[in-house]
Length: 95
Length: 159
Image 1 (tube, rainbow over the protein chains, first blue to last red):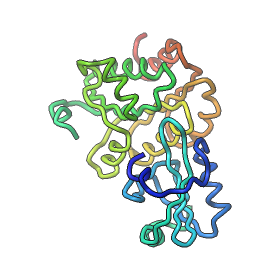
Image 2: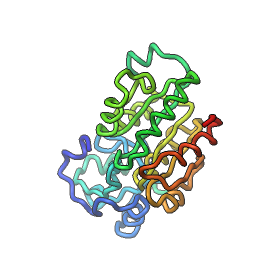
Image 3: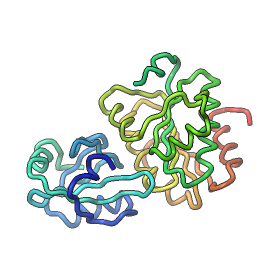
Image 4: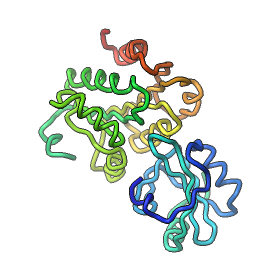
């Protein structure tokens, strides 16, 4: 990973989760979730995935999918109040 | 865009490569690059460092793949409108590969997108690719011949 690898992240779903499993997990387990499209910038990196990409927010914690070519998709959580606020302003509620 | 690319002309074919753990990908990427270079395309490859290093070692004179780039950087340039492609070919042998293909579909809406779905069990992966694209689906791990035949058919190349 690039910059995201250097963040203090928590792994919510282990390596190898499918992209759709990550989206369903966010939708089922977070009261607050938002949708973005591939190419949305998060933590200074362009997020990829099958649109719409679901991002969960719990307070200052952002939960998002991150795909690595060799492994699959991780679902990661990172605490960042500023980035969470930016997601709330720039992402959308509807698929 | 690199200095090398500025000296090349022709439409761009972008090859998006997956993890190199399935051997046929390497041979078929060079085959496709060769075919498109012969037809005047600028072929640009994007992948992780391991797959790019394999290609660099296999093709030291850069006849078929003059330019290569780490996938994340390539995606960034497409998002920032610094890079475009008329044709995008994505190799997918895992869920991650389908994810990259879906991303390319969204970022390059005007491009012809061909997704080559291969590996030990490609059918379930093919079902995940439910976005507009052309799919070439073939069980292939070590032997590239049947998949090469399918690729040749799709692009209209003689074997």
